[in-house]
Image (tube, rainbow, N blue to C red; front, side):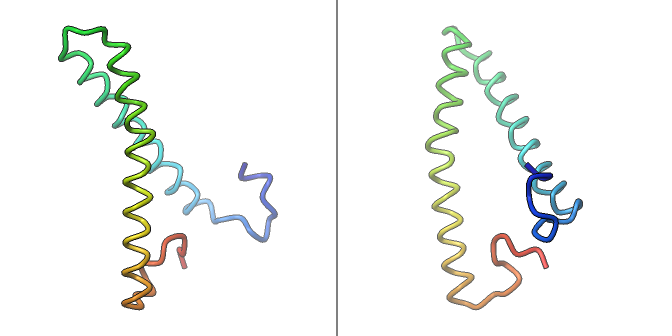
Length: 89
């Protein structure tokens, strides 16, 4: 995806790395948490892993979206210029 963006609109490599590494770290954390939780039960670990993954992908994303909206509203209302999402300047 990075190389399909126009050169004038590309993020610097350092910012791109920060964005992608936080996503990778979050995915690894959820993966190992799901493995740990599925090992604690007598049920089928694969079905429990799938349930945890689906809950994370739906309710987790909803909570994150809601959190970003609330923080964005507070930042806009208080005029905090350094906390605007997506602004790395």
